[in-house]
Length: 103
Image (tube, rainbow, N blue to C red):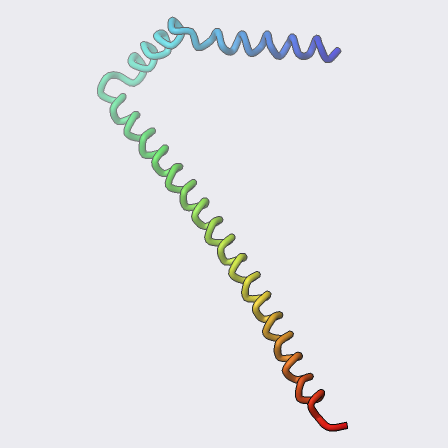
């Protein structure tokens, strides 16, 4: 059962890969030139370039915001640890005068 499924997947990949043969790509290129014309293709490419650029900028923005959030989380954790250490030191200092009192 699994073997038959695996063979079917491999056959479908072979079909998909055969779509992108050089002859097919040439046919697709001719169809695009025929549909859009020579004057529209540079505009189309500029639009695609702008879209890719905007996507990349958005991706970088999300990445930088994520990294900032991680830095803030690390800072918050460090502040929490420092507060705990300060509280422990204050408790120790409060206990020392009590120990120095005569009995």
